Length: 363
Image 1 (tube, rainbow, N blue to C red):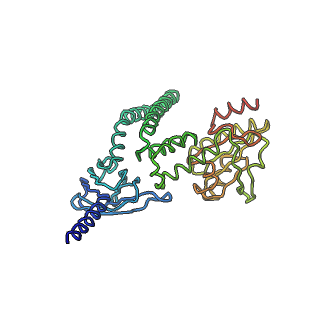
Image 2 (cartoon, rainbow, N blue to C red):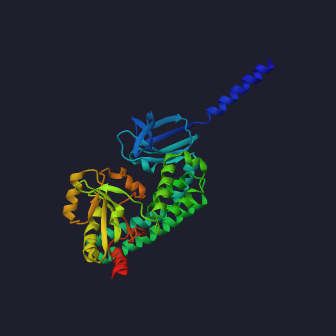
Image 3 (cartoon, rainbow, N blue to C red):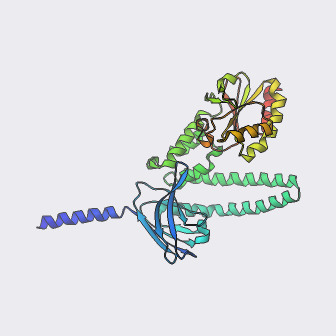
């Protein structure tokens, strides 16, 4: 009988331990009398609901089990905005107002606590950015372009200081889920090798997380198209449907220009590129435009309106274009300058920067 009691006690303890491996979210949102609150996450570039709960007099509660920690979003039915959550199998409390969910306070998860503490360190930068933005608007409205440019340069300087603080956090907290989250937001201008330096230091359990895997794939793709590497060859249809192979254009200094008709910064840069092309084409400069459009008519109309006379190609898959993944392109405009042998010699040169580089090579 004693053995049976011991066995039952052990089984009960086992289940008790297992039952603690759950997340439990309790919250109160002022201004929310009823409705639903959703726990959501991003999968395949879409936001999906993975859990929900009814709100009663502002209170809600939800619980479940996670296979691994991950980044989630708390959303409220018929309300804009969300609260970012670094969720683990433990207890978390949320308090705030339903009309400003992004300002709500979440606590309890060690990763969430890391995030909250780090956000405090960013507040001085946020205040500076707000102040500069107001000054920039006033300068623009008054037509003072020189002052506006000065403010933009100051903004860039402060942004670099903030990035330095973010990189320091990532370097010092490789086991915090906040680190890959921060890395994803500042990686656009980073080389693949630098990204991998940080990623390879991080907790190996993060390899189970979809966005971490995507971040690593992105870094590896960028490393393959770093300055000094041969351009990755590809074949895409032009505006007439004819297949064009990138390597068929080698023999000139060649710019691979990623753009789209819907991209305002791209369209704003096109006049500069047209002027540069006219000046240097006869000296040995060429361009191939790779559009991330998904609508043929809009793509063709933009080419004609902007006067883009060089080769244009696209599979009309938008951001799902294989060539964008191959080149690690996640923002546009983006470009790669190749030498005559197809080796990448520079990236993301626009306006005067591109003209200066071509002057060095061709004048």
